[in-house]
Length: 306
Image (cartoon, rainbow, N blue to C red; front, side):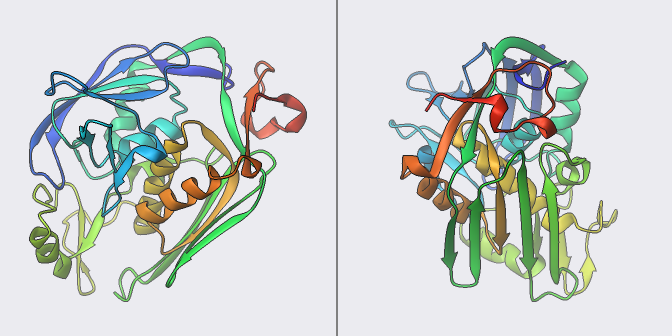
């Protein structure tokens, strides 16, 4: 099976759950899509103008989650875990039908999305994949937060550092190669918050659907969830999952290296906007060769279509 051909899923996959922030019950179905469709969201509870494209320029809010909206104000929020799963599994084309404003949080990670997609399998097309190759280094800073992207020969590396004053979370760092690493711990890592921040979220009208079933809650130096952590770097690994999902709003996979400290949805979106503000920062490439694993992809195997 070539990893260089566009992929979709073999058949429909349905999920039912609650929105983390809205607290609303929601049904979501991922459907196969034709080559060059990309990822498309459709709000089935809205009669007209209900298509929303997960594109970096369609991000209407990045406060604690990523929300995309179309020109008519129709939106879908908390898309990052599903988008991270689609990115990691190399799903190029899919129609996502949803009957409410927020993607269901499920267990707070991408685990159930990944499991269901792997179970139904993949449909491989004859259409070659396209990738964005970073050509110039870019760095953004906002107080103690920073994110940068720089050229890479063959991979997407994410080097993420997380710092919390809470002693249990503390400082965590992990580095993954998205096209080469085993991403199981990233997929399985859940969203998290401090116990003292729960009331703040509610005051903002957020977190209405949150519970110990879909989030890790830390109080002082204790995990309140009975099952504890799923892996020793679950906090930073979840941030990497978020980052993957937000990066997929570029529309294509990326060849580059991300270095991020204390970043989040907003900073990642700002970085993408900076990348696409100048055509010299990137190239859009189409991979022509067949059956070449990502780890062997190099410039001689790429044809620029920019």
